[in-house]
Length: 429
Ligand SMILES: Cc1ncc(COP(=O)(O)O)c(C=O)c1O
Image 1 (cartoon, rainbow, N blue to C red):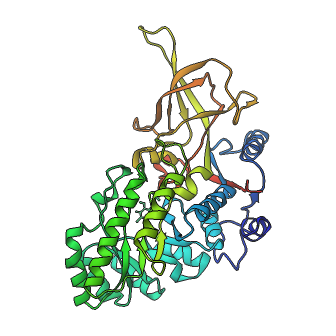
Image 2 (cartoon, rainbow, N blue to C red):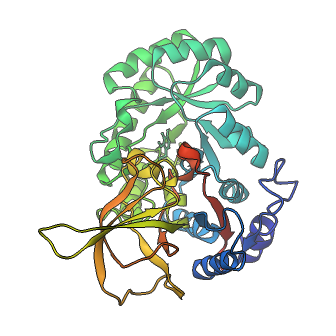
Image 3 (tube, rainbow, N blue to C red):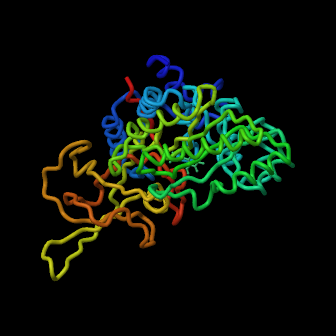
């Protein structure tokens, strides 16, 4: 897609009824300006409406251009593998709409994710229902909507599917080595290889249609070789299937692709350099290869801005230097739940100190040790306990980058704090 098309068709017509049956909000608009300018504009607007309720609420900037850049990067480095965006990582309506318009598929985990995607792209063949243990009524819904591709990893699920959707196109999710991943999904899902024969035999006895194999190396995978190892395991299962009379045509290499290139040296380039050749060596071109990347597309595209709502000075007898506790207005029970659930390490930067706007600027003033806390009354609500920041006052702002994955989607409203809104921009110009 050309830039112009991207801007007009995808980004600047968010309420286009042809694309959206249920537009997210009639007021939604997408700017075409740098993230720095959008935040500044938003902060200036807040100051202008000084006495309005909720004026200093935390907010996200979602950069749809960054999502698009990730799409281009994927196409360049893994052209054979079709991404099915894992909606669970960030079901933001604009992100889903953008990726739908770029022709991506979607990995859905539930009925409402399927509904959301069907509303936007209308094509059930672009969905894989990649949850190995599904609620019966959701399988019925998938059957009504012709969402045929779905994963399984146990015999009970096969019996359920036989009753509810006998023509489903089944994908056997196998267990892989996820010991190098931050979120080890193998604790919950994935058929060990020594159970594969029994599962395939059960599928055969039930006359079910198994079309391929999937795996997930774990979310936040830190070792690119986990992917090649998993591809090798999938090959073995393909061979087993063939020996039992199945004709597998689909390999699904799951998620686990790094989002922002900041974690322990792992990069998308490294994963692609290992995964692409492994797939080509072991699977002939007629096998369709898909993936379920989540954080890869959204992590770096979202920045959250939080307001300093309070400060406490901490004096100790042993150290004459004071340290500080800052309280901000989104936290662990909100968008920062990623610290708890997704093992993310977050880092605050100064956004506005007094009247000085500091996005992207080097801090010159002296720094002090500090911890940063969310707004609830719970002491688990600690975002970072050993940062260095210049002295901030109540009313100043911080920003936190790479906050697009597993953040807003799992936020609660505990203690009555609302979820942070998103302002959109497109920096791909
Ligand atoms: C089945 C499945 N696919 C894909 C993903 C997305 O993983 P990631 O965001 O690490 O790419 C997940 C994450 O939990 C998952 O459970």
